[in-house]
Length: 588
Image (cartoon, rainbow, N blue to C red; front, side, top):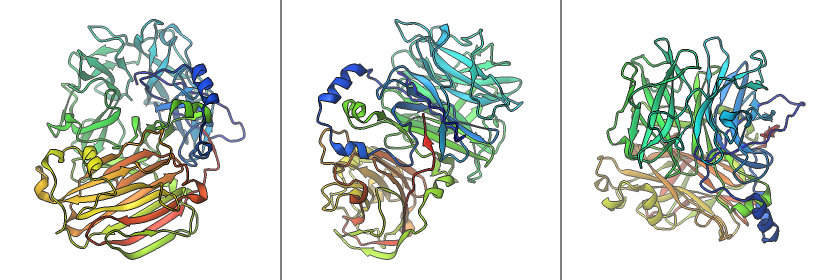
């Protein structure tokens, strides 16, 4: 990403589990010493120290961002990420490294990459890992090579000892950099090489860039040996969207099955390709599904309007993501970074900033129009043994029902809703039909509708002064210019999440591509103290929000089902589990 993060690594010899994530970009570089002075003088709410996540990945302290080169090697999951070993704000960025057997329990290793050669003397920024035909990994990453400007070049690194399953040491060959910004490329907007794919005797990678004032570009580079790279004359794809950071490009099967395929599967009629870019201007991850022509080295989205940002991995606080293929379970896994939404002074006071979202399995929906996402199955091992269940509960207009019998500050909640009738669904202003976030801001959780809003109040205080709403709302098909189906909106509304006014808590929202003819829709929310990660309709729409309650903390956090629509809603089934902390969570 544009401005990079570093990482601290603490080796833990007692346990061999690796976690690595790369921290991404930030628009503002803070003076750590000034912030430390402000933090010492400021009145920081005591509650902020109780909001550290329990089961989402983060280091014990300091700043993180982009997850950069996740991979699976000799029985271990590896996560590399951007990290600042010297503080809780961006700066001093290195590649931190952690390992795991199960994607849940992590042990930090020593720093994998830090500035040490001319080609990365002023920064080791984001990159990716590729598994070679002999099974060994190689890392490509962006280095900053000049002190006065972010002059970005692409470097390569190899494991010092490929027989070491923990990949504890990496070597940068003397021929770095292997790619430099030639041919009119903007050297300050040229970064984040992707995982390579192989065909016709050549490896290929993408590098994100900015062409002109506003055109995002994914350049293709080819090589036979990972040393000499040649740029293809035309980019793989481009669009007038601003700088493309952290590109990702990978195949997905068209059969609707949840299995993944290796990145080098490019010539099969059973695959489509996904091109994802992190937009520096908007701070969201957008993607399209389309066709890759390996002879012309061009990619064409199936939906010509796709470049206008209709599809996101996540409609909330989720950025600089990276996928990898997991051969042990034949799945593709997605990692993403969630920044803090409190102040930098608060971050310095509490000593840490940034988390990684729960890793998600991704696959192509049977319709072929979008991706599906779901938390990896391993996270279910953290569920408590005694879930609380509700069944066939009717929630009438204006009612809310508390779910009791468990602590919900750290929980996993799955609920299936039934809507007996859609006749009362309200009309939709056509001006808002393509802007879910604005629609959620106008039609929030407390604005009565015909069918909805209905869903969950999470991290709610005992008197409901604080509550975060995750909900659905249904609109008549007449308001949806693109379909005859009713339009379903999914929102995360944290505007009442905290009595602390010094927070950034916007509403987040996305439309759900689902046919509500049968009146059924599901929701899953992973609640973890200061984060709520929600999956609508089996993973068709996902929203991650950062939440900082001042009252709804620990045993004082409550969970409710609510309905602020005129039509009755039925909870056909709700199951909630308390979530345990992983036995090992030492990210750095």
